[in-house]
Length: 139
Image (cartoon, rainbow, N blue to C red; front, top):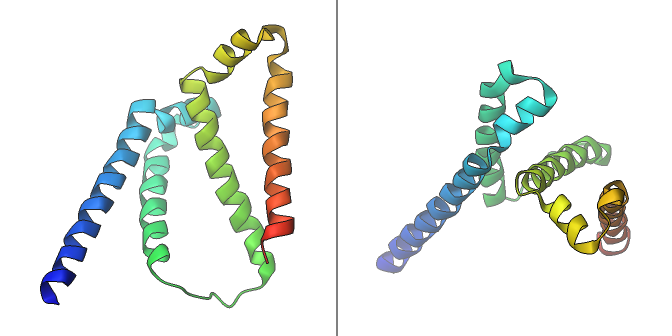
């Protein structure tokens, strides 16, 4: 029984370290934080961005371990959901920008002169899909 518990702890810790290291390597190799500060012209706050990513990842990890209730109004979920959506959107945008996904896709589809249409189709598709999910599948 004790050996099984220790094995689960070691495997969980090893898996967490692997995923965390992969996440950090992903952000580092893509240069997401420096590129974000460059785009927003807030280079002097780069350390704040780095600490925000570290603290956010750590807090998310700890919060995922426990089921808790903050006892606040459901309206509190609006800014939290908005912040989470902005984070995911910025991460996806940084990834597509670094990898030049949109120019390559537009070139292959033959719509280089309409890249804004492609971008808006992606954005509207994501928004409509998210709204559909939340309206019909979330209680």
